[in-house]
Image 1 (cartoon, rainbow, N blue to C red):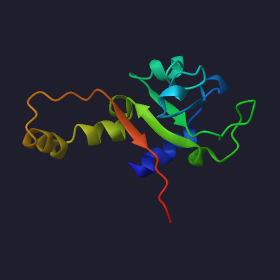
Image 2: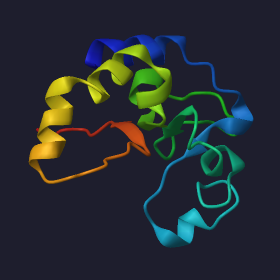
Image 3: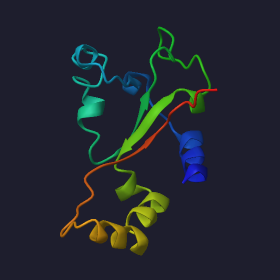
Image 4: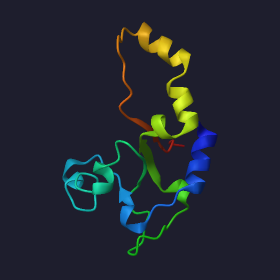
Length: 120
């Protein structure tokens, strides 16, 4: 999955108007340029979309850092539109685990690859 994500990042082409910074803070989610009101975020449920860390773009929307260091997450439909993630999500081992946890009719509604920086 890590190898596949690196390839997805290398091939990503996100127009400047879609370069959405991701935030978990409620007040920031409500701002026009943040996820709460950005159409890019709100319509991401059935697509593979890229969400970026704060401060990775200049005033024109150009990257200030390498693309692979700019991402917060990739979501929300990796399980539906990327062959590697689809195979992993629907693998028999995963299905068996979910059944063992007691789920009767599980449905995958969202998938993400979240980038976390490890502390030294």
